[in-house]
Image (cartoon, rainbow over all chains, first blue to last red; front, side, top):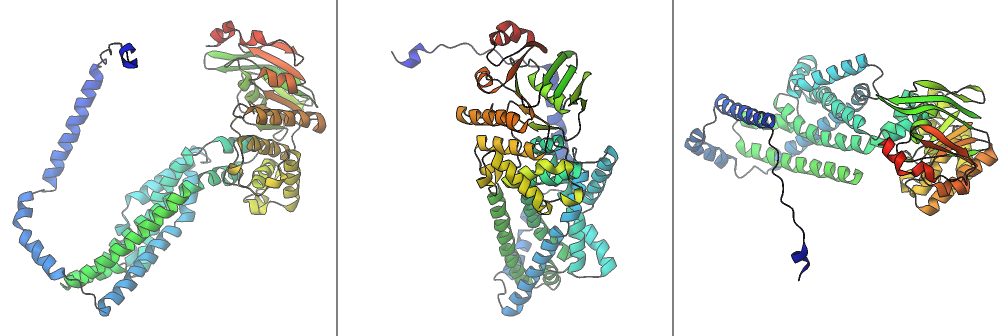
Length: 272
Length: 237
């Protein structure tokens, strides 16, 4: 006799089906399906058009390949990529103090009052809702074309995103160390400085690195609307039908993005 | 002396503490024992000002509790693991420091650091001052928490199940340390414990709670079996 022969078994009772759960599931599934049908029509999705137009794509690629690897093209491409990197870097680091202040105001537990909490949350929502490209266009009208409006645009949008992410990290922090210092008579700011912030530093830095990664990619798009960097060069080569140069710029971008992604991932991995 | 008078605490409809009176003299380690849910930790939290009371008062040496009079040692220790041991101990003094002198650890004065070192020496961890708190063992971390409490310069120390997460050897060390602080530093120490044997070895007096009422107040070797009878457990649940 094996152990399995002596195993006792019981019939599994049938899972109770609640009518409300079934109705809610049906409604949600129908609503999601309807939204996809509407989206399909609204975006004029047509695989037929894609199949018919393949020749145009092929011509485009034929003109782009091989990429132009002359120094005359590579040199501005590399310096443009560097500018894109610097826009992403400054757009991230200059937003840190604003993000931190707003995150502390927008996190339950550190917000000094409900009024401050709601105000900070509203400011963050506004900054997040306005796309960085729109900020860039606004700042281009103020300071002209070039990388500087790109930096300003990224700072504004990034404060909105990073402030919210940081506020949520602060809310999720282990409340124990803060409680210990409060019971020792520490004030609100002292508690934040000596318990809360040191506790969540790895999460905050991890999110910062993630946003740096995103911002370098965003600064590329900002270049397309006149904020300088390699995005500006890509836009220029498309306008001049120099698709081989465009491909060179894109390859440089790929290297840049992969390098930043690796750096960001390595830092986050080390922190975790 | 710590005096808890008529402490009454209610969680919604459920009354957790019924007019509890407890005193702890200076130089005394009082252990509070009882089954799960009998109100031990609630009593400690009420004494520390962390739990609102329906009725009752907490006085230290006959006066209302001041913000720095009572230091708390928590069950889950609650150190900032990424900071150094010394910075964690210095943080115990935050309540008496102006903001401009305490916003970051670099602003802590030399006097405060030296005082924190003395507190660390008191718990036998002066040689670990510059280690990260998270690198210490559980027992060592709890001793750092005791040093942090000392750096607050309190008159009363409340310890909420301070050894529940520690192995027997570390539990002995921490309880011996709390008893020594009570006797040598003339602090009033109240410790909530789950282990009657530890209380018998280290406490000067024990108080037993059952269903939110004091049912035992006597010497450390008192028979505490009645506190853990099933009837008491059922009544609580």
